[in-house]
Length: 396
Image (cartoon, rainbow, N blue to C red; front, top):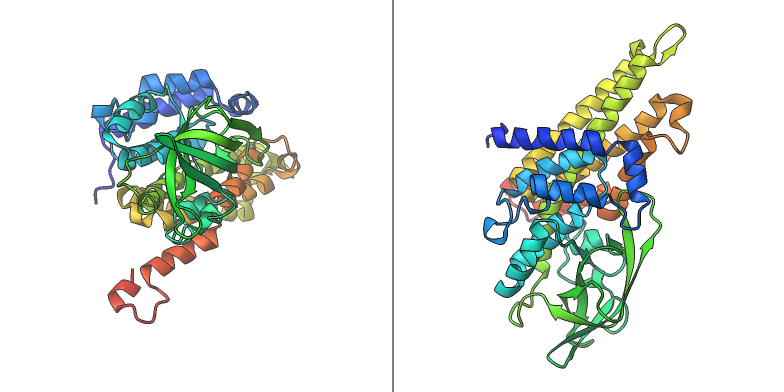
Protein backbone atom coordinates (compact mmCIF):
# COMPACT_ATOMS: atom_id res chain seq x y z
CA UNK A 1 0.00 0.00 0.00
CA UNK A 2 1.36 3.41 -1.02
CA UNK A 3 -0.04 6.02 1.37
CA UNK A 4 1.49 8.97 -0.49
CA UNK A 5 -0.89 11.28 -2.32
CA UNK A 6 -0.45 12.02 -5.99
CA UNK A 7 0.07 15.53 -7.32
CA UNK A 8 -3.50 15.50 -8.66
CA UNK A 9 -4.89 14.56 -5.25
CA UNK A 10 -2.88 17.29 -3.53
CA UNK A 11 -4.14 19.82 -6.07
CA UNK A 12 -7.74 18.72 -5.59
CA UNK A 13 -7.40 19.03 -1.81
CA UNK A 14 -5.80 22.47 -2.07
CA UNK A 15 -8.38 23.81 -4.51
CA UNK A 16 -11.31 22.47 -2.54
CA UNK A 17 -9.95 23.86 0.73
CA UNK A 18 -9.46 27.30 -0.83
CA UNK A 19 -13.00 27.40 -2.22
CA UNK A 20 -14.56 26.26 1.04
CA UNK A 21 -12.46 28.70 3.07
CA UNK A 22 -13.93 31.56 1.03
CA UNK A 23 -17.50 30.32 0.65
CA UNK A 24 -18.20 28.04 3.60
CA UNK A 25 -17.29 29.72 6.88
CA UNK A 26 -19.44 29.17 10.01
CA UNK A 27 -21.70 32.12 9.18
CA UNK A 28 -22.22 30.90 5.62
CA UNK A 29 -22.98 27.39 6.88
CA UNK A 30 -25.63 28.71 9.27
CA UNK A 31 -27.19 30.77 6.48
CA UNK A 32 -27.15 27.90 3.97
CA UNK A 33 -28.88 25.37 6.23
CA UNK A 34 -31.77 27.78 6.78
CA UNK A 35 -32.62 27.92 3.07
CA UNK A 36 -35.42 25.79 1.65
CA UNK A 37 -32.97 23.34 0.12
CA UNK A 38 -30.76 23.18 3.20
CA UNK A 39 -27.62 24.01 1.25
CA UNK A 40 -26.09 26.73 -0.92
CA UNK A 41 -27.21 25.83 -4.44
CA UNK A 42 -24.77 28.27 -6.06
CA UNK A 43 -21.81 26.76 -4.18
CA UNK A 44 -22.98 23.25 -5.06
CA UNK A 45 -23.01 24.18 -8.74
CA UNK A 46 -19.55 25.73 -8.46
CA UNK A 47 -18.13 22.59 -6.84
CA UNK A 48 -19.84 20.46 -9.49
CA UNK A 49 -18.61 22.48 -12.47
CA UNK A 50 -15.12 23.39 -11.26
CA UNK A 51 -14.13 20.17 -9.48
CA UNK A 52 -16.66 17.63 -10.68
CA UNK A 53 -17.28 16.81 -7.03
CA UNK A 54 -20.44 14.66 -7.38
CA UNK A 55 -18.87 12.75 -10.27
CA UNK A 56 -15.48 11.96 -8.76
CA UNK A 57 -16.19 8.23 -8.47
CA UNK A 58 -18.49 8.00 -11.54
CA UNK A 59 -17.02 6.39 -14.65
CA UNK A 60 -15.92 8.70 -17.45
CA UNK A 61 -18.30 7.02 -19.91
CA UNK A 62 -21.15 8.52 -17.86
CA UNK A 63 -19.65 11.99 -17.65
CA UNK A 64 -17.82 11.49 -14.36
CA UNK A 65 -14.21 12.07 -13.41
CA UNK A 66 -13.50 8.35 -13.16
CA UNK A 67 -11.41 8.49 -10.00
CA UNK A 68 -11.22 5.81 -7.33
CA UNK A 69 -13.48 5.88 -4.25
CA UNK A 70 -10.42 6.93 -2.25
CA UNK A 71 -10.42 10.26 -4.07
CA UNK A 72 -14.01 10.82 -3.01
CA UNK A 73 -12.99 10.11 0.59
CA UNK A 74 -10.17 12.63 0.29
CA UNK A 75 -12.60 15.26 -1.00
CA UNK A 76 -15.06 14.51 1.79
CA UNK A 77 -12.34 15.03 4.36
CA UNK A 78 -12.21 18.63 3.17
CA UNK A 79 -16.00 19.04 3.09
CA UNK A 80 -16.04 17.62 6.61
CA UNK A 81 -13.58 20.27 7.78
CA UNK A 82 -15.99 22.97 6.67
CA UNK A 83 -19.15 21.01 7.68
CA UNK A 84 -20.35 21.69 4.15
CA UNK A 85 -24.13 21.24 3.85
CA UNK A 86 -24.61 19.67 0.43
CA UNK A 87 -26.25 16.73 -1.38
CA UNK A 88 -22.82 15.11 -1.84
CA UNK A 89 -23.28 12.28 0.66
CA UNK A 90 -26.74 11.26 -0.49
CA UNK A 91 -26.00 11.69 -4.22
CA UNK A 92 -22.41 10.56 -4.77
CA UNK A 93 -21.84 8.20 -1.85
CA UNK A 94 -25.21 6.43 -1.56
CA UNK A 95 -27.33 6.81 -4.72
CA UNK A 96 -24.80 6.84 -7.58
CA UNK A 97 -23.04 3.57 -6.59
CA UNK A 98 -26.40 1.79 -6.28
CA UNK A 99 -27.50 2.97 -9.72
CA UNK A 100 -24.12 1.93 -11.16
CA UNK A 101 -24.30 -1.53 -9.62
CA UNK A 102 -27.99 -2.35 -10.00
CA UNK A 103 -29.36 -0.18 -12.80
CA UNK A 104 -29.99 -1.31 -16.33
CA UNK A 105 -27.88 0.10 -19.14
CA UNK A 106 -30.70 2.53 -19.98
CA UNK A 107 -31.04 3.65 -16.37
CA UNK A 108 -27.30 4.22 -15.99
CA UNK A 109 -27.15 6.20 -19.23
CA UNK A 110 -30.12 8.33 -18.25
CA UNK A 111 -29.30 9.00 -14.60
CA UNK A 112 -25.54 8.95 -14.03
CA UNK A 113 -24.55 11.84 -16.37
CA UNK A 114 -26.84 14.43 -14.70
CA UNK A 115 -25.81 13.10 -11.27
CA UNK A 116 -22.12 13.41 -12.17
CA UNK A 117 -22.38 17.09 -13.15
CA UNK A 118 -24.63 18.15 -10.30
CA UNK A 119 -27.74 18.78 -12.41
CA UNK A 120 -29.63 16.04 -10.57
CA UNK A 121 -29.45 15.09 -6.91
CA UNK A 122 -30.56 11.76 -5.49
CA UNK A 123 -30.93 9.99 -2.17
CA UNK A 124 -31.66 6.62 -0.60
CA UNK A 125 -34.94 6.27 1.30
CA UNK A 126 -35.20 3.32 3.71
CA UNK A 127 -38.14 2.93 6.11
CA UNK A 128 -37.69 4.12 9.66
CA UNK A 129 -34.40 5.28 11.23
CA UNK A 130 -32.69 2.27 9.70
CA UNK A 131 -30.03 3.64 7.36
CA UNK A 132 -27.17 1.97 9.24
CA UNK A 133 -29.01 -1.37 9.25
CA UNK A 134 -29.88 -1.15 5.54
CA UNK A 135 -26.22 -0.50 4.70
CA UNK A 136 -25.15 -3.40 6.96
CA UNK A 137 -23.00 -1.14 9.13
CA UNK A 138 -24.33 -2.39 12.48
CA UNK A 139 -25.51 -5.87 11.49
CA UNK A 140 -26.31 -8.08 8.55
CA UNK A 141 -29.04 -6.63 6.35
CA UNK A 142 -29.99 -9.93 4.71
CA UNK A 143 -33.13 -10.62 6.77
CA UNK A 144 -34.58 -7.30 5.65
CA UNK A 145 -36.18 -6.62 9.04
CA UNK A 146 -34.94 -3.03 8.87
CA UNK A 147 -37.42 -2.37 6.06
CA UNK A 148 -40.49 -2.95 8.22
CA UNK A 149 -43.06 -5.72 8.15
CA UNK A 150 -44.15 -7.35 4.92
CA UNK A 151 -47.86 -6.97 5.64
CA UNK A 152 -47.80 -3.49 7.18
CA UNK A 153 -45.15 -0.93 7.92
CA UNK A 154 -42.41 0.40 5.72
CA UNK A 155 -43.19 0.95 2.05
CA UNK A 156 -45.27 -1.49 0.02
CA UNK A 157 -44.88 -2.05 -3.73
CA UNK A 158 -47.43 -3.63 -6.05
CA UNK A 159 -47.49 -4.24 -9.73
CA UNK A 160 -49.64 -1.95 -11.83
CA UNK A 161 -50.18 -1.54 -15.55
CA UNK A 162 -46.67 -1.97 -16.98
CA UNK A 163 -45.07 -0.66 -13.83
CA UNK A 164 -45.11 -0.42 -10.04
CA UNK A 165 -46.97 1.63 -7.44
CA UNK A 166 -45.63 2.48 -3.98
CA UNK A 167 -47.50 3.24 -0.78
CA UNK A 168 -46.06 4.09 2.64
CA UNK A 169 -43.95 6.60 4.54
CA UNK A 170 -40.25 7.11 5.19
CA UNK A 171 -39.84 9.56 8.08
CA UNK A 172 -36.09 10.24 7.88
CA UNK A 173 -34.38 10.62 4.50
CA UNK A 174 -31.14 12.52 3.92
CA UNK A 175 -32.03 15.40 1.58
CA UNK A 176 -35.41 13.74 1.17
CA UNK A 177 -37.17 17.10 0.88
CA UNK A 178 -35.06 18.37 -2.01
CA UNK A 179 -33.55 15.44 -3.96
CA UNK A 180 -34.67 15.17 -7.56
CA UNK A 181 -34.57 11.37 -7.50
CA UNK A 182 -35.47 8.94 -4.70
CA UNK A 183 -34.19 5.38 -4.44
CA UNK A 184 -36.88 3.81 -2.26
CA UNK A 185 -36.55 0.44 -0.53
CA UNK A 186 -39.96 -1.22 -0.64
CA UNK A 187 -41.61 -4.59 0.06
CA UNK A 188 -43.12 -6.64 -2.72
CA UNK A 189 -44.31 -10.19 -3.18
CA UNK A 190 -46.97 -10.27 -0.46
CA UNK A 191 -46.58 -11.20 3.17
CA UNK A 192 -45.55 -14.83 2.76
CA UNK A 193 -42.92 -14.17 0.08
CA UNK A 194 -42.05 -10.60 0.95
CA UNK A 195 -38.71 -9.27 -0.28
CA UNK A 196 -37.13 -5.84 -0.42
CA UNK A 197 -36.37 -4.18 -3.76
CA UNK A 198 -35.21 -0.70 -4.77
CA UNK A 199 -37.40 1.60 -6.85
CA UNK A 200 -36.85 4.94 -8.58
CA UNK A 201 -39.29 7.76 -7.83
CA UNK A 202 -38.97 11.07 -9.65
CA UNK A 203 -39.45 14.50 -8.18
CA UNK A 204 -42.97 15.76 -8.68
CA UNK A 205 -44.54 12.32 -9.13
CA UNK A 206 -48.29 12.40 -8.36
CA UNK A 207 -48.91 11.24 -4.81
CA UNK A 208 -45.39 12.08 -3.59
CA UNK A 209 -45.51 14.35 -0.52
CA UNK A 210 -42.31 15.64 1.09
CA UNK A 211 -41.51 18.04 3.89
CA UNK A 212 -38.35 18.99 5.72
CA UNK A 213 -37.86 17.73 9.27
CA UNK A 214 -36.24 19.52 12.21
CA UNK A 215 -32.92 17.80 13.00
CA UNK A 216 -30.21 18.10 15.62
CA UNK A 217 -27.58 18.71 12.94
CA UNK A 218 -28.92 21.16 10.38
CA UNK A 219 -25.92 20.52 8.13
CA UNK A 220 -27.41 17.06 7.49
CA UNK A 221 -30.91 18.10 6.32
CA UNK A 222 -33.53 15.38 6.35
CA UNK A 223 -37.04 15.14 5.00
CA UNK A 224 -40.12 13.01 5.49
CA UNK A 225 -41.32 11.23 2.36
CA UNK A 226 -44.91 10.05 1.96
CA UNK A 227 -45.81 7.82 -0.96
CA UNK A 228 -49.52 7.70 -1.75
CA UNK A 229 -49.93 5.24 -4.59
CA UNK A 230 -46.92 6.73 -6.40
CA UNK A 231 -45.76 5.48 -9.77
CA UNK A 232 -42.27 3.99 -9.52
CA UNK A 233 -39.68 2.24 -11.67
CA UNK A 234 -37.83 -0.87 -10.53
CA UNK A 235 -34.10 -0.24 -10.25
CA UNK A 236 -32.61 -2.86 -12.52
CA UNK A 237 -34.67 -5.49 -14.31
CA UNK A 238 -36.90 -8.30 -13.12
CA UNK A 239 -33.93 -10.65 -12.94
CA UNK A 240 -32.04 -8.33 -10.58
CA UNK A 241 -33.89 -9.12 -7.38
CA UNK A 242 -31.08 -9.18 -4.84
CA UNK A 243 -30.18 -5.59 -3.86
CA UNK A 244 -29.21 -6.41 -0.26
CA UNK A 245 -25.60 -7.51 -0.98
CA UNK A 246 -25.16 -4.38 -3.10
CA UNK A 247 -26.52 -2.24 -0.26
CA UNK A 248 -23.97 -3.84 2.06
CA UNK A 249 -21.11 -3.18 -0.38
CA UNK A 250 -22.27 0.41 -0.75
CA UNK A 251 -22.35 0.67 3.04
CA UNK A 252 -18.74 -0.43 3.35
CA UNK A 253 -17.58 2.16 0.83
CA UNK A 254 -19.79 4.82 2.41
CA UNK A 255 -18.33 4.07 5.85
CA UNK A 256 -14.83 4.80 4.55
CA UNK A 257 -16.00 8.11 3.09
CA UNK A 258 -17.88 9.04 6.27
CA UNK A 259 -14.80 8.21 8.33
CA UNK A 260 -12.71 10.62 6.26
CA UNK A 261 -15.39 13.28 6.59
CA UNK A 262 -15.52 12.86 10.38
CA UNK A 263 -11.72 13.07 10.55
CA UNK A 264 -11.81 16.35 8.65
CA UNK A 265 -14.37 17.77 11.07
CA UNK A 266 -12.39 16.58 14.10
CA UNK A 267 -9.16 18.02 12.73
CA UNK A 268 -10.78 21.43 12.16
CA UNK A 269 -12.40 21.45 15.59
CA UNK A 270 -9.02 20.70 17.16
CA UNK A 271 -7.25 23.39 15.11
CA UNK A 272 -9.83 26.00 16.14
CA UNK A 273 -9.40 25.00 19.79
CA UNK A 274 -5.61 25.23 19.63
CA UNK A 275 -5.89 28.66 18.05
CA UNK A 276 -8.26 29.80 20.80
CA UNK A 277 -6.18 28.60 23.77
CA UNK A 278 -3.13 30.33 22.32
CA UNK A 279 -4.97 33.67 22.40
CA UNK A 280 -7.15 33.34 25.49
CA UNK A 281 -5.38 34.52 28.65
CA UNK A 282 -6.07 33.65 32.26
CA UNK A 283 -4.02 34.55 35.32
CA UNK A 284 -1.76 36.61 33.08
CA UNK A 285 -0.81 33.84 30.66
CA UNK A 286 -2.23 32.01 27.66
CA UNK A 287 -4.56 29.16 28.57
CA UNK A 288 -2.66 26.90 26.19
CA UNK A 289 0.54 27.31 28.20
CA UNK A 290 -0.87 25.34 31.15
CA UNK A 291 0.46 21.80 31.34
CA UNK A 292 -2.96 20.22 31.85
CA UNK A 293 -4.31 21.90 28.71
CA UNK A 294 -1.28 20.79 26.71
CA UNK A 295 -1.85 17.19 27.78
CA UNK A 296 -5.50 17.26 26.78
CA UNK A 297 -4.69 18.73 23.37
CA UNK A 298 -1.89 16.20 22.84
CA UNK A 299 -4.29 13.34 23.56
CA UNK A 300 -6.78 14.77 21.07
CA UNK A 301 -4.08 15.14 18.43
CA UNK A 302 -3.05 11.50 18.78
CA UNK A 303 -6.67 10.35 18.59
CA UNK A 304 -7.39 12.40 15.47
CA UNK A 305 -4.22 11.23 13.72
CA UNK A 306 -5.00 7.60 14.53
CA UNK A 307 -8.50 8.04 13.14
CA UNK A 308 -7.04 9.64 10.00
CA UNK A 309 -4.75 6.66 9.46
CA UNK A 310 -7.70 4.29 9.86
CA UNK A 311 -9.80 6.34 7.43
CA UNK A 312 -7.06 6.41 4.78
CA UNK A 313 -6.59 2.66 5.11
CA UNK A 314 -10.34 2.11 4.77
CA UNK A 315 -10.35 4.23 1.60
CA UNK A 316 -7.87 1.72 0.20
CA UNK A 317 -9.66 -1.32 1.67
CA UNK A 318 -13.39 -0.58 2.15
CA UNK A 319 -13.86 -3.83 4.09
CA UNK A 320 -12.33 -1.95 7.03
CA UNK A 321 -14.81 0.91 6.67
CA UNK A 322 -16.90 -0.01 9.71
CA UNK A 323 -13.97 0.01 12.11
CA UNK A 324 -12.57 3.21 10.60
CA UNK A 325 -15.96 4.88 10.92
CA UNK A 326 -16.23 3.85 14.57
CA UNK A 327 -12.81 5.29 15.35
CA UNK A 328 -13.47 8.49 13.42
CA UNK A 329 -16.87 9.11 15.01
CA UNK A 330 -15.39 8.57 18.46
CA UNK A 331 -12.55 10.97 17.66
CA UNK A 332 -15.01 13.60 16.43
CA UNK A 333 -17.27 13.22 19.46
CA UNK A 334 -14.35 13.49 21.89
CA UNK A 335 -12.72 16.40 20.07
CA UNK A 336 -15.98 18.34 19.75
CA UNK A 337 -16.75 17.83 23.45
CA UNK A 338 -13.27 18.94 24.49
CA UNK A 339 -13.51 21.94 22.17
CA UNK A 340 -16.57 23.14 24.07
CA UNK A 341 -14.83 22.56 27.39
CA UNK A 342 -11.60 24.31 26.41
CA UNK A 343 -13.43 27.32 25.01
CA UNK A 344 -14.68 27.94 28.54
CA UNK A 345 -17.88 29.87 29.22
CA UNK A 346 -18.21 31.11 25.64
CA UNK A 347 -18.02 27.56 24.37
CA UNK A 348 -21.09 26.54 26.34
CA UNK A 349 -23.31 29.07 24.60
CA UNK A 350 -25.53 27.26 22.09
CA UNK A 351 -24.73 29.77 19.33
CA UNK A 352 -20.96 29.17 19.45
CA UNK A 353 -19.39 27.56 16.39
CA UNK A 354 -18.04 24.66 18.49
CA UNK A 355 -21.58 23.34 18.75
CA UNK A 356 -21.74 22.83 14.98
CA UNK A 357 -19.10 20.12 15.34
CA UNK A 358 -20.70 18.68 18.47
CA UNK A 359 -24.06 18.40 16.68
CA UNK A 360 -22.42 16.74 13.67
CA UNK A 361 -20.76 14.20 15.98
CA UNK A 362 -23.99 13.39 17.79
CA UNK A 363 -26.14 13.24 14.65
CA UNK A 364 -23.71 11.08 12.68
CA UNK A 365 -23.57 8.56 15.48
CA UNK A 366 -27.37 8.43 15.53
CA UNK A 367 -27.50 7.97 11.75
CA UNK A 368 -24.62 5.57 11.18
CA UNK A 369 -23.77 4.11 14.57
CA UNK A 370 -23.60 3.93 17.47
CA UNK A 371 -19.86 3.35 17.80
CA UNK A 372 -20.15 0.25 19.99
CA UNK A 373 -22.46 -1.44 17.46
CA UNK A 374 -20.16 -0.58 14.56
CA UNK A 375 -17.30 -2.24 16.43
CA UNK A 376 -19.40 -5.22 17.53
CA UNK A 377 -20.49 -5.93 13.96
CA UNK A 378 -16.92 -5.63 12.68
CA UNK A 379 -15.76 -8.04 15.40
CA UNK A 380 -18.55 -10.49 14.56
CA UNK A 381 -17.75 -10.29 10.86
CA UNK A 382 -14.07 -10.98 11.62
CA UNK A 383 -14.96 -13.96 13.82
CA UNK A 384 -13.28 -12.62 16.94
CA UNK A 385 -15.88 -14.16 19.23
CA UNK A 386 -16.59 -17.29 17.18
CA UNK A 387 -15.11 -20.32 18.96
CA UNK A 388 -15.05 -22.23 15.67
CA UNK A 389 -13.04 -19.52 13.91
CA UNK A 390 -9.52 -20.38 12.80
CA UNK A 391 -6.63 -18.58 14.57
CA UNK A 392 -5.85 -16.76 11.34
CA UNK A 393 -9.42 -15.43 10.96
CA UNK A 394 -9.71 -14.58 14.65
CA UNK A 395 -6.53 -12.52 14.41
CA UNK A 396 -8.00 -10.21 11.75
